[in-house]
Image (cartoon, rainbow, N blue to C red; front, top):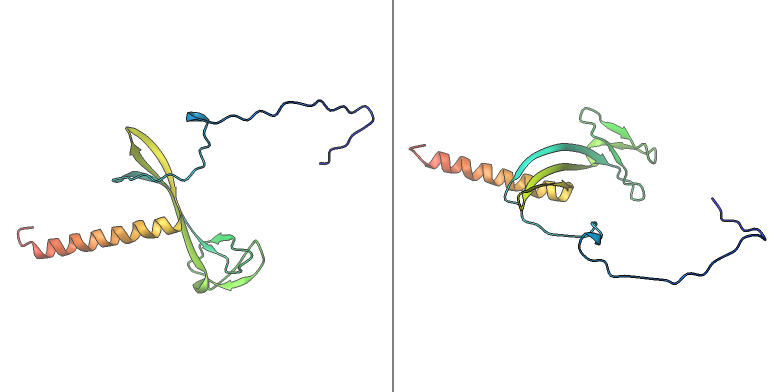
Length: 133
């Protein structure tokens, strides 16, 4: 769409007004760090593959049983075993008595999975070392 003018077009000058945003008026797309003891539940977990072409990097379906996959974005055929895997999940946690929804992407999900593996490993070792268990 293009803006066009005609001889009948008139412009009215206005005073530019800027104000400082506070409270609820602040943008919600800011980086914020919160600490969550545990997640109540997950709503959605998606796994996918990432196109290995550097100027594409589109998400592709997670093809477990395929050897080759074609990227719908750039049309490149690539070996599944060489594609980067990605994951994201919607997680629900309680913060200040309210349920909040968080979306965790690949880097955070890998960290959470590694912590879970560590906790499971430690718990198994504790059960094995505790004769009364």
